[in-house]
Length: 568
Image 1 (cartoon, helix red, strand yellow):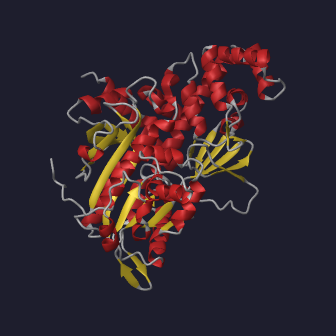
Image 2 (cartoon, rainbow, N blue to C red):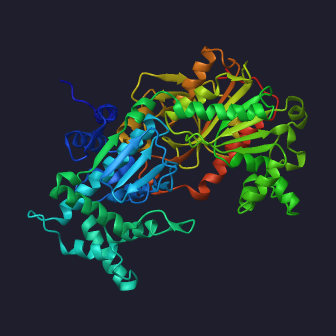
Image 3 (cartoon, rainbow, N blue to C red):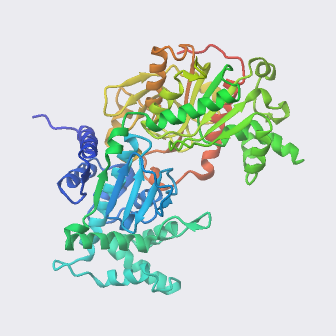
């Protein structure tokens, strides 16, 4: 029998993880410490995601991966032994506390000190994301328990000291803090410096509140939960999938409600017969580019010659920019469907010429003639991208009349992992390759390298649409990059968006002439050590590529189209 390559083994492990996750969702429950959970953990260890670093090493705790996961799960998750994933729960009129993770718009409710319920609104991608994070946490908890317990189940002195720190019995300052971190580093198998860095990262406040329980408490509760499991079967961590979750998968429940609300908003404003330009992006860059210079002039301040310097000058002025924007064609439409995708609608015909930054080249006469409308939708998550775009592009019935919207362009701007370059570089998609499936989509991209005027390194080629950022393996990515695929990056939504766009063309919901634009800026390079997502956010590094792409997209929308589709 022919030996499998590392890449083939990793791909098989990823497929195994996905198959197990699908099966467990249908079964209704599983225990991470049971046979099914062990198989899930085994496959996760086998393909060893880059974002989880040293997870597969039983001697040490993975600290950067722990930070990444804790930022994306709600406070207190480390002590829970009962986790419910559901498609819908009406908790609004209960005493259950609603909690939102720091870096993921994920709705969850604390049912009790050891029970939490997640409302899944983004489909299978969110389920995979949840299960990878929970599996990682359980693997790390098992390491802690093995480190602190002897063969008789007795715990070490360092563990008793950690308990005092976690319970607030010590004043964690000076020498006492140093000693506590040193004791913790012994348990974790990490250096004092590594442990101290993670402690300080987790000790930060967000909007004046703690978004987690701190490193000492998190590690202690993870270990205590595993000790409780050893003592009683009733204490085993169990993950449940409700019937409402199983019924929701693939049925676009939240996406349908979201899209209908957005289209009703457009209809109410009388914009349904105008040319519409859909942009998937963040909630601030298009607004700042179109209205930022206007608010600075209104304040009597000079407008910096550089667009990027202007963005820095707008820091702390978000509310003023929004007030001005609302007086000139801008409306913010918050999501109420549970999809967690807010929308901005901009009637470009109401934007004054002196709002336009000098670096932004637009045709004011064309804007007044065509009166384009820009619909900016917040980022979708994985497979949710297909559901929301599929529903948004469909005709809609108002007052017993079927209305087809006049979609002129669809632009996707997002963060992605880059394979040949570095953080801050830009990638333009020529195709989307769906990882783990035979589905691939060619993209006739309306964006070209020369659109960016040499202001950033731009890579052009296929993008790999992956199952999740937590499911990436170096060997698999290296294969996509170095083989005849010649992929330049990886992301989670592009292929799903393109699938919806292709379906809408086939169904006649949009014209074959709709312009499609995909541009990504590199938030990480998973093939380079220290540049994975677990290494931290980009910070100010992301300003230039974000606003460079925004500038190019806005200029494409607000100038007469140039027929470059089909250029080689």
